[in-house]
Image (cartoon, rainbow, N blue to C red; front, side):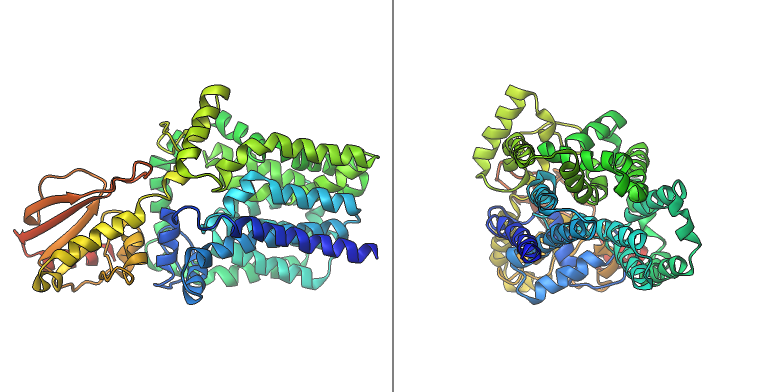
Length: 504
């Protein structure tokens, strides 16, 4: 009877996770990055400039089932639900009781960081899933060295590499954890080498793609380092790790302590060492704070077990859970879209001015604004597409037939392509990021609608350049200046062809 009750609890946690996300999915527009990954799914390949192929492949699945915001955001929500359910299952496998299961499931369900991650269709959700699955498989290997567990580990490693390259850091940290404990003996196993081979084999097509395209990963990482990562520092990174899960920090922290302090958990100590090594490695490399979120997840099951071990009475356990929730409540409007935008602006302003929490308004450029960056990135795109559609429809037929629509950034091109069928627009081109890989060399055009975020007053290609409109939504991060360019000064068809060939 108890076993059936715990199984029901596991399914209830998974269902609650999905309900939380389904109820907020349509509150804001898609994020600029969501448009990109969805658009990449229409150009399936073994690699992209920004990401490995798994997220765009999932984007293709979302397109097959309708391509609505619900369809697109369904998959990160499912990824989060899988993590919760498997973490609770792991608690049972490790001998944890009902309270261990409740504490683990509640913490993973209510952590604001995980709610934020699983709200958006981005690689981060799938990256977190495979970091957890890799650690989960390793725990099962330590518990039971069955051949199948090694093969499962290899599959998770391969898929993790196809989800996000940062899994390499976690793999290195896990290796360090094993080398520093008696689990180093597992590294000598033929089954472990087979797991590595399986992972390599699954990721091989992407490795070949990278080589064939000049390893764009290096260029992408260099650009990140010069633009976004330059505003990170070790102290800020470390503090962000401690507060990432807000009140539920106590759960992973006690889990980490339990790995070193509780005898029955001691054989999993390599997991704790790997967590610390991950923080050190990514922190020293000036990575973004959310890069490490996947490493926390495996600590929550150990946290649930450790809290049950250290506390003897149910009131204490339930008190810890209630206090964690009460401390975290003020942060939920920042993590998931439950407030209208204007209400959120007022709320974040209040938190910043009253409690000094201005870090929530700091963007990757190091400056402070009136909305969190991710929220601002979910505004203005539909307005932009409607205005471009209005301009395109106003052109004479002969001009429309030879008009190129060009996005200066992937956000412009991707959002226009998301709405283009509904608004009767041709597909937008761009040479930004992955768009260079599928840009057509031969395009017959003599006029152009250009969308960019920089003010411009002249063009090297066209004699006439008119600023038509821009995004007027004050909550939008992008300016979205819409220009109409005509009367070519050069052979624009040939010049475009040369740019595309050079980019390929």
